[in-house]
Image (cartoon, rainbow, N blue to C red; front, side, top):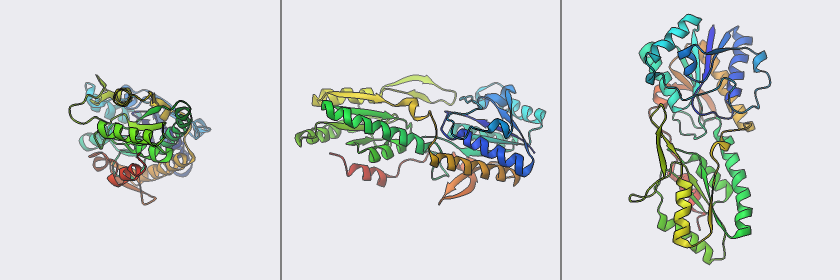
Length: 343
């Protein structure tokens, strides 16, 4: 078969491991040849390609990012975009397309399959870990480890200066990174999108710590967290092609409120894209490789419109449409685990 591969949305540690696994088994086991589409859905829209084979994939396992490049291009926001995708695949003789991405990239894949018959197979990718249908996505483990390493470092400087340090991590709609990193890093507060921030409660807890002689505190907050009704969350109004507001500023806004309400010296650290970059952890390399191997097998089984997923430590296939129909938010029980250590 001739198979296309693309990576869409934000970059993520482990993308290259998926590409490598798909190409390695596809070429050596099935005799496939591959076309790499550059920059997400922009590639098949504009016929922007690069060759892919085993030799070109050597050495990419530990590399962060994606050798194919990525973008947030939405074919349904481009005039004739879906038709251009289908036409490119037909013109290049591509019999199947492996789309590696998160909610937006795979949401497009589901529509293209349902509405235009595009033979697409999905691989889930998001450091936010909020994609349905799979217990975990590759890249999440790496992002958490990066956040924990940062929190460990913040503890020592906070203790040296008796400061409250707010650490803003990624997580638009779900606080998986914040909760895992906050628990593992020993944060005094973990604030997530699933629960509006009660500023009075946060500040009362920090003052209680201070009264016990704990003059340094780490507060972890997900970028998508919001204050209770009546408070303002700082964001820009700029939208991407999928209609998402570009978030930013919750860490600064929170630090300002803590400082004004408690009088404590409060600073903020925004980890931002540091969480996306660099080499993937061993766990993410293995998971991404398992996904890639399962993806090429699923292609040869004709499982189009499906996505590989991790369930009970087994790789299975699930409907892309079902997996992208709703976000996977943090289990309240996990938030309660973090709350045990508040104060």
